[in-house]
Image (cartoon, rainbow, N blue to C red):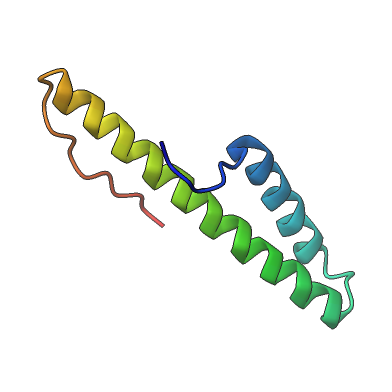
Length: 77
């Protein structure tokens, strides 16, 4: 078991989408936009960590079940 605080990935993604919409609107004052951007970066890092943790768990399960090793998954940006 991990000692890391588990995050609600779906909620984090929804929150991140809302932040992006707010920033794209261009209606925020600079100081508030910077705070929202910082919050978005934190959410992104938390989501990436949660996804990496899930990937590791799946890999462990596949290995323990005698399954094949996972291929790298590249996302086109």
